[in-house]
Length: 154
Image 1 (cartoon, rainbow, N blue to C red):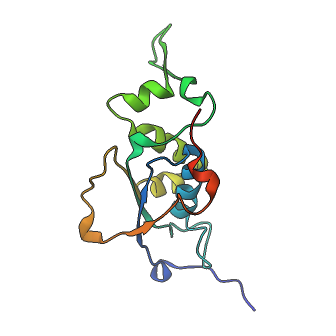
Image 2 (cartoon, helix red, strand yellow):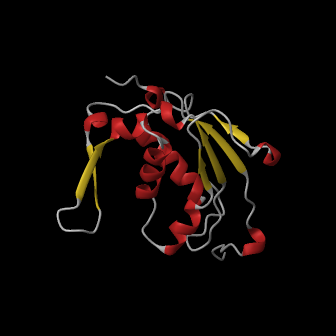
Image 3 (cartoon, one colour):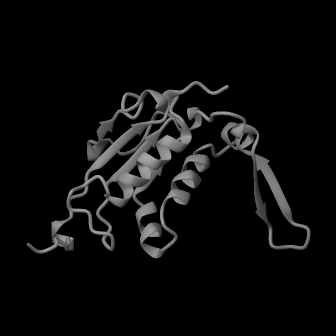
């Protein structure tokens, strides 16, 4: 028996829609990362982009447990003394709350060029509307997968 290795002709991509309203961020990000890589498929091949296209709606209503809302996120402008920070709660209440979900998923993928290609298959929207109705995405109910996925933030 030989090991199966997928070719581009074998890859079948689907469209998945996930509602992030009330879902814990880390658990949501790990499910999205698994779907983007294609590890949920029996024909998973590590060097091929065989994951699904994932649409996440209501990213601004994602839950954080513990004191993670007060955790600072740092970045540097490139100039001397240019370190800046903003808490995760400020980002979620700001102009681009979908960046919290994008960063969480990005950090759960491997740091290589294939992961950057797989991140292009992720679309995150702060509200409930999305422009991908023509693809007729399947709804993946993350809330009912596990009772811990919807823990209320303290």
